[in-house]
Amino acid sequence: MTRLLLLWLLLAAACCQAAPPTFTPVTPGRTLVFPADFGAHPEFRTEWWYVTGWLRTPDGKPLGFQVTFFRSRTGNDQANPSAFAAKQLIIGHAALSDPALGHLLHDERSAREGFGLAWARTGTTDVRLDDWTMVRAADGSYRVSVHARELAFDLRLEPGQPVLLQGERGFSQKGRAPRNASYYYSQPQLKVSGSASRRSGAAVAVTGTAWLDHEWSSEALQEDAAGWDWLGANLDDGSALMAFQIRAKRGGTLWAHATVRNAAGAVAQYAADQVRFTPQARWTSPRTGAVYPVATDLALGGTTWQLRPLQQDQELDSRRSTGAVYWEGAVNVLKDGVPAGHGYLEMTGYVAPLKL
Image (cartoon, rainbow, N blue to C red):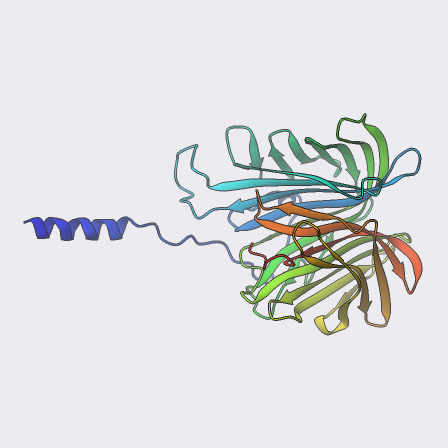
């Protein structure tokens, strides 16, 4: 009897074990639909709304800023009725790049979705993490509010151009396998107004331009990927430039892609063999020892763009939230040596291979 009871308990335990979580895959051919796709996609594993930009104070001082909200679906049972079940995580990163300081001011937060304190809602962009918020209004503008220990933003982002679908109508390949992909669109050339402050200083009025990326996926990176280098740049003539490369753990490039849309709306796509990042100067972090190529030349076909940092130390340590350390920095963009615009360069996987 005892052995029969033990066998029954073992079988019951095996049957009750949770099945591995399943996430909705990214597949080609899906048509992005707006405004619904401005909102969250909770059935996918990972999602982010990423805003970067250049600001100017009334005295003409340049500042870079970053505000990012991540949504991450956990492996917990999505049907669990408990309000305390961590089914979706909301993570926030914010940073201010001020050359007068010589390094980034940044902060991070994370919380399980729920309790009226943290959410990423479907239907349109509406993300909250306590008093950090990003909300899209009916007129298409965004309100972004972040109040942290060392920095604060209250910004309005106003679109002046249509949504830019990346890749093949929003299907953005990140490797040779079709599953290594994301749904991805950008909103470049956003007109920024509002206020910003650092530490205990008074808020100052700021204006500028920003770039918004919204991306969601379930398996974007292949196992032998270390991380990526990514650029989003608003050019002075009204054009928009996006480029990225996925780096291999063994060295070299696994995948690359770039998009340039001119002010008239014509889009040029660049395949992996037409995109080349060539480091020109490196900076070593005194905190992590990571070596970042902070000055880089980007070759797209027959054009070369020079990316030069607003300041070298723009490293962001988010190991308390996403587990990653990355360089996210404001860069000046030159075309064949002539000033052409401003953007943000992101470099991940230089401390340790990135895990999404």
